[in-house]
Image 1 (tube, rainbow, N blue to C red):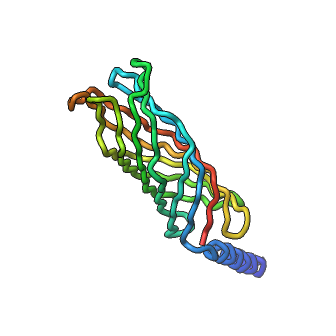
Image 2 (cartoon, rainbow, N blue to C red; image 1 turned 90 degrees about the vertical axis):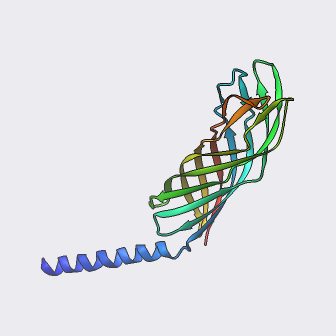
Image 3 (cartoon, one colour; image 1 turned 30 degrees about the horizontal axis):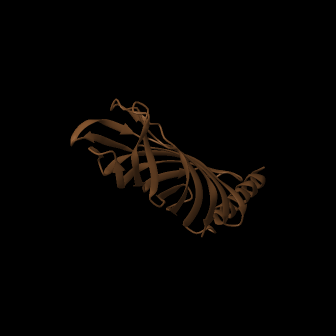
Amino acid sequence: MKKQLIAAAILSTLLSGAAFAQQTTEGPWMVRARAVHLDSANGDNTGLGLSMNNKWMPEVDVSYFFSPNVAVELVLTVPQKQTLTSSVLGADVGTFKHLPPTLLAQYHFPMNGFKPYVGAGVNYTRFSSVNLLPGVSMDKDSWGGALQVGVDIPLTKGVYLNLDLKKVMIRTDVKLAGNKIGEFKADPLLFGVGLGWRF
């Protein structure tokens, strides 16, 4: 019995070592390319019934793994043009572009096949090319939190199918003749699907 226990312990150690070696064969970097659907919450207290259009957009992120479980991810895209509409006026108020890079700390759950993860971090959004009705303006910057859940599904060695869902806080003050009349809360839900490469 004692020999069997010793043999089992040795076998367990070897298997654990093999599993760890398999995990560490992948490099610490991962790059993902996603198609992302932006679904705005359109929270508005200006009295104008403001909303912005939903859309698909490209997204690229770069992740660095400090361990098999812990990583940081920088999410990037190109400036996105949006149309702002007023239900009260029954017309478009104008257009603007926004660039919303997001930095997230993640915890990954290595499993057989699927690799789910959760993340939390901060978003900075820069509004540019603002072209609204005369006298209407908005703040040019927004800072807010971001939450994330997702999963990487292995396809081949180092290549993954990625499904990702983020909630990002993006808000701006709206002004009329320089006076604040309220706040527009885009606070979009972002669903992405794409591919990831680990190296």
